[in-house]
Image: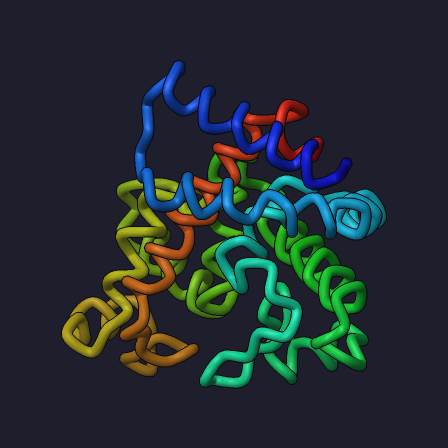
Length: 223
């Protein structure tokens, strides 16, 4: 019965793509559809801890799709573990004893997202989502450094994603002249950020998944 229902949901999703169009990235859409059974499997835990931490369950789901593809035993080369790819230090700070335990990992990720959302409480939701995701992937310190650059340049608000996005690109050693103007030490307080492209791509991918999950809504994911 479950397999038939899952197959039915997948067919509906494919039909929606074909009917409504507007596909930004077919590869990501198909990956999302292929993960439907796992999304449904972990749906109760995602909703449980999203409600507890007052975060959007659909964003938690989108983040896990990108982080591990819902592989609870996933481990990265840099040490990140589990569904939401928590780093050992972060997991410890969040009270997660076993990052490879699905429930603990989801609980920790939701708790971490809650903390990050609180850190960017002055931004509107459209920008807040992206600032939070950039912090989750690249570190909140890097995002704060980028906000310092935006604030110094006085051309836009550091509460907005687009100027912060541009400033993240300026956290490399090649932009030392800018750093000398912003910080007395002559360099970003949290170090140079050569991995900015990975973080920017990460934000785009998670937001794409998030948008699709919101679009499909009750029809496919019930999130």
